[in-house]
Image (cartoon, rainbow over all chains, first blue to last red; front, side, top):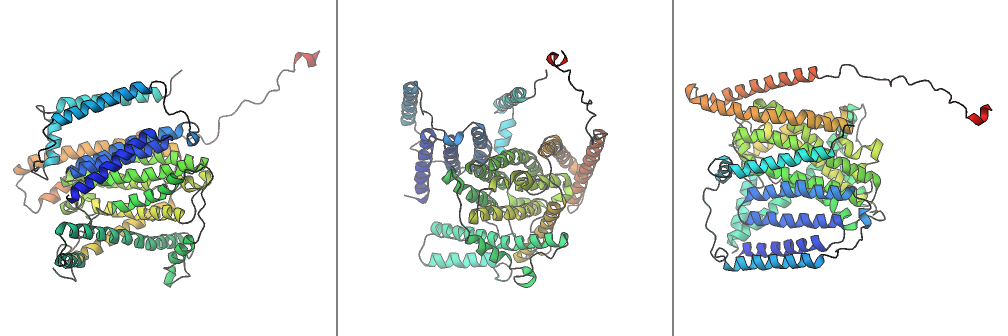
Length: 170
Length: 413
């Protein structure tokens, strides 16, 4: 077993345990903290796949913005420190069924997928990869349409948030 | 490789050879060396804080016409050591109802976030923790973890003042990240790289000359990230006791304290690295040890400015602070980023037709950018003047004189 495999196994176990704890922990803030650990684990996977840019972006966007927003929103709720309500509602079995189907589907696809057994090809052009990514996001024959659509969607979301939160003129 | 001119690389090579000769594989040796390096950088950071705490207190004292610490050692230079020993002996108090795990995790997070920054700062051409090719983004990511530490500290203390402090922290730290990232993109644009050491290498003309506005925006928003005066709303003593660190005592409080002072020096070091040429200076490439000297001379000059600003500015109000960020810094940073991109692209498109000497190109480029920045400053000042508040109402509007209400009918009859 190489050092990389040992690191992968440790990180995988930590990430899975953290992801499970997000669901089963009773306190909202603790859930958010476990979520941060999970996202860190995913960032480490990106590093192991030699995608340092995505690892850093993962930390900035998901931990620096989204997880902090979760915690902030949870902090604004009432009596969050003694939050001991019931953990599930009456629809728990539907959720469990959907999750089971999803797992079965993913396992089925992974079993028929050839990529998990073939070794990774060495990535070339180590330093130019970032600029390649940037160019492919704005070149018309590649990903410019999805990229711009996502931007428009985000702007729409932002305007909506401002409208909802802003002062209503009487 | 010479021990006098480049001791760190010399020792690293010597250790590497020693460990390899003991029969360890190269991968294991690299891991061991990285761990030793991380330990040394961390220890160095803490040792530096012992000095900067004394320096800051002394400067405070001199500026306020006091002596400052003057009992332990010459000029009181060892004053911090007894302070550390004292703080070790203090009792840890955990408030009733506090979330114990989170409460203890928060100070560790906020110190380690600052120390993580030091991993990518180049002290000299050859002395750098890790050369990450997305170093600038790494700085932003690490800053987010520091914000997390403050938020958790405020929430887990089970104290209203702490919670108010961390509400303010979220508003301040998260929103000042926006102009900081935008200002960080300007050196990335100018240096054509995201690696910090390659940005230093690209500064044959310091970036402060090319883009003084970006340097100012970065410096201001980093001051807000540290949360010191004039941006010390997170722990405003007169309103919130001590903000998010109210309930902390002993070494846990000490960690917040150390984290704050180390952060203050770290932003000076970052400003120097990104805008003042980092280790650049005469003979820095030939003698890497000189690069360390230049780096720290520049850093301490910037640190002096940080301390001066802290001591001489009053605290902002929360609405002023947010207005300053969203209505001034962010639009300015956006305009600057777009203008820099256009000017730089135009310059390099026109360059073949200009017949410039090879050595003059960086200077002409710097001149063009400087003129653009000066124009932007002029426009900004004109805009600010035209939107200036004309007259400030110091007193409240005259209120109607109190008139006795009509006596109820039962009294009249």
